[in-house]
Image 1 (cartoon, one colour):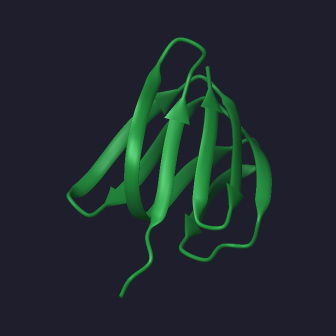
Image 2 (spheres, helix red, strand yellow):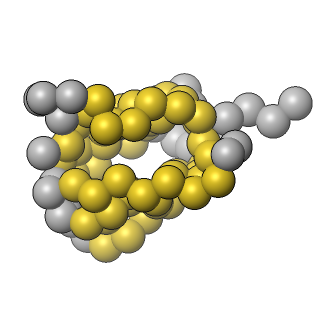
Image 3 (cartoon, rainbow, N blue to C red):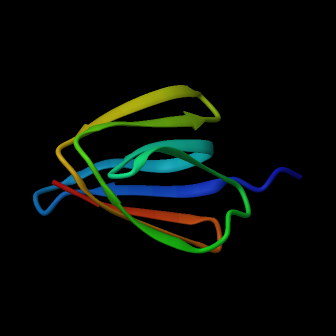
Length: 81
């Protein structure tokens, strides 16, 4: 059984993405970084760029203007602008 990441990408106006993923790449303010299943808990600020989500049904890209991401217990929560 492969545990997946639960990914929620929200803006103040709407939800940009909700689903499961095996990997998510982020445009961090310190550079690109990737989160995989069972990642240690983190909070990080995000720069303008694209979040790349590798999901069960393929790859999805979500463009953001910046924001923050929190990762905890295989739940990835992004508050984007």
